[in-house]
Image (cartoon, rainbow, N blue to C red):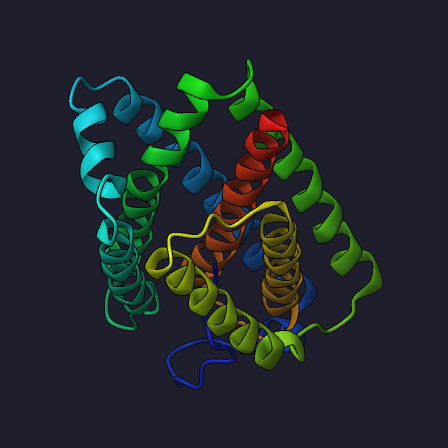
Length: 241
């Protein structure tokens, strides 16, 4: 999920992408998606390594074995996400920006370990690969919609904030009352992630400033990771029926 709040007003950044020269804007977009691709590949590599570690069963038990342990994990992840975004928006150091992106990728990989572990052990064959392919296709289609239409989806920001708070409330409620969130919730969250991708992609084209490609790639990666999470969860839920 994206935590970006564009446009940023810092004078050290260049012009808004939409107001930049065509070559400058194209270079910014290229850098953004190259960094996004790098983040995705790093996530895949790190998650693969983590899944092969002998301590994974104990880690999964620690993260989800107790009633409120997952809420603690979510709280820690949210805190790390805020730090990562702040670093990625750093105006003083490119190394700090990259550290923010790297920190978020590592945190996302760790958070995904329980779901990946359960999918690998109890899910249908190749379900993780299927979820990844569906995520890629959906992301590509949503990106194409924004680039072809040129529509500004920044108006979704308020809706996404309210939706995110509502989703968080539902998750907390489910933990407290030991209720399993079913297929309708997963479908709703897939729609939520898709809306965030439209919003973030629109920001890349219109509301980020030249030079903010690291922050832009982090926002996109967060939305893609959210989409992947709930697609994988939905596939596993459908398999249990």
